[in-house]
Length: 138
Image 1 (tube, helix red, strand yellow):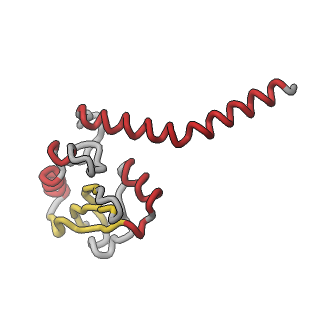
Image 2 (cartoon, helix red, strand yellow; image 1 turned 90 degrees about the horizontal axis):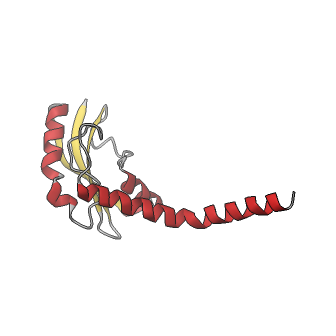
């Protein structure tokens, strides 16, 4: 198993995402993996994979626990406050049960949900109007 810490950078906006990965492939072979964070996925969809650069920050990490410790060094509360940071919480793996979201993370989540609602609002409103029209015509 290969463990590494990487950074995805949007070459158009300079926004970045820091992640840690464990894979059966070497970091160089694992080119297809681009991250699983909500915001990085949105960015990849919006700007396209071709506008992102993946940099390996640390490779040849001995264990999963070491990978988590190293990710925490790169992804801390200070980095999360950077407006270009796409991460929503500090590094360290785990689940929401173990790592409750910070106030900054909650703010970013709220902002992300608002943006998603704005994008989908027109579709929702049109769909509701169509449903009402169909009901009135019965």
